Amino acid sequence: DNLDEAGASWSISVWTRGMGATFSAYPSTLRNISRRVLSEFNRGVDEKNSKRCSRIVDGFYLELRDYSAQALKQAFRSMDVLLFPGSYSKAELLQAMTSANMTCEKATSAIENGRKGAFAATALVMGSCPEQEARDVHSSVLEGFRADVSLHPEDV
Image (cartoon, rainbow, N blue to C red):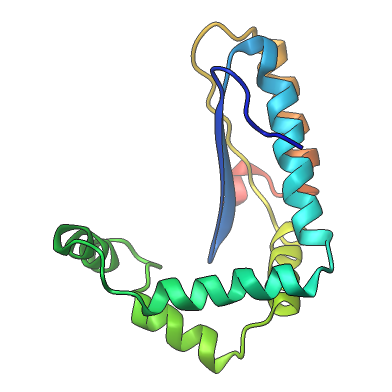
């Protein structure tokens, strides 16, 4: 499935304490692009293609061992580790992956645990998107993540 759409961009992030999705699109295509992207996200998590998954895990190991980026980029990455709680250096991440003997099954399990644990969600919509459409897309994204959204904002 082609996830390109004129005037649209998207990203999905998974980190140690959460997940995030960013969608930028015209109101007429926002719901469609968010559904398609989350469908692919879930397909990737649910798929049991060991060769593909091994390539992805190997890619993470390779990226964490690579220090050939420009010096300024490395400096900013190091600064983030110092300034933002919960941030880890490449060496720390590599050591954690190595000591845990990270596999596709373990990575998939971690994402599943994140989706089934306490989950709080926030949405920000800017531009000409009607309020109800924004609410519908927000609900659609939460459904797309297949997350337990029982956590109330005051409990965060």
